[in-house]
Length: 308
Image (tube, rainbow, N blue to C red; front, side):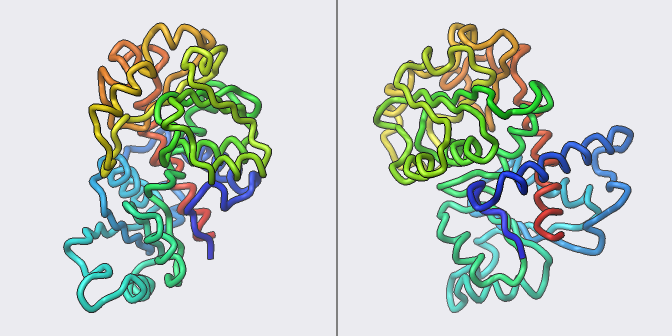
């Protein structure tokens, strides 16, 4: 049984195979309608349970469409509408019940330990749709999007600007180690990556640079990425955090320091006028809407990999 919880759990060979499968499946759908199933329907007769502890647009839509395109069905569960570790039923018991009903589970959670707990007791695979520590499906779709635009990501320069200590930056650091690209993180010292992920990066010889100077971080970059300054359930003083991160806004001046064919990525939802200007996100170098679409294709490949 194969789970997909963190990028670092998997080898470079496995991850690259998932990306290549996603490219092939996307290409094979050129003449199909959005919800039409793939010709081979590899998920036919199977179902996925999706549990959302946190609000979602892209994760909910992209996984539901992914399952339909694979020929299967999905069941969306709200923790407030099921037992899910409440009352007399533990997460362990919920996991065992789901194992009898469906073929795979996707969990979007506020607490990464819930993923670990579920994975210990499920008899079926689980996919991390987002946690407070990692966002692997988003990063896989980002790599797919980058390679569609700029070719193989190996040895390219990817720049992350803003909060360097969140789930996206964690998964991006892991991806840099597995896909062998150069990662520069431009962030305030207060929001530098955690000691744990930096220790992992050092052990795995990740080509990682961290600077407090945003212009330095994007020099000759092939891709600039950022995220909302205030994440869901971010228990901080929002005014202070936004003030600290204001010099790290991705604007035209910053984008112009990157390579002329550099692309801009954002996982969405976006704080327009905060972490990025309208001019950048709506500009010709922005690929954010293709990123959103590619969640479907990357996740289809991840689902298939888990069940193969």
